[in-house]
Length: 103
Image 1: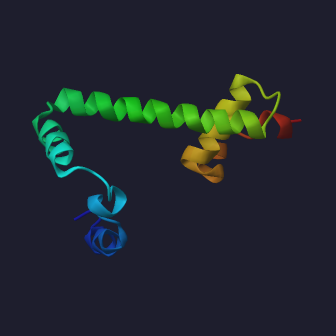
Image 2: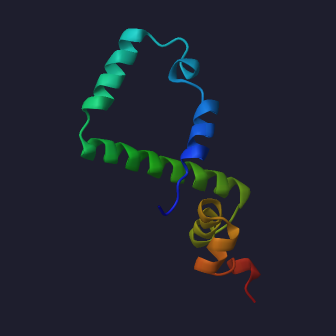
């Protein structure tokens, strides 16, 4: 077995709030329709939804980076995004230092 993270997942699952805790006012009929729709979705539909969520998350992260790094180029923002996604050490190994630290 390469890596078994079942104990960590079990511990984290106990801490995660339930659907009902996150949506206390949800109408049970609406909830049933939502879950039926999610259950019946094809793999392609589920993949497309996940792709849209990933693009949205990236766009939100870039918007935050634009606010923190005023005047930064798109290349610099992409490099900062790599820091967020990969961590600073791996991003530096993969993409080199930030343009502002090169000299």
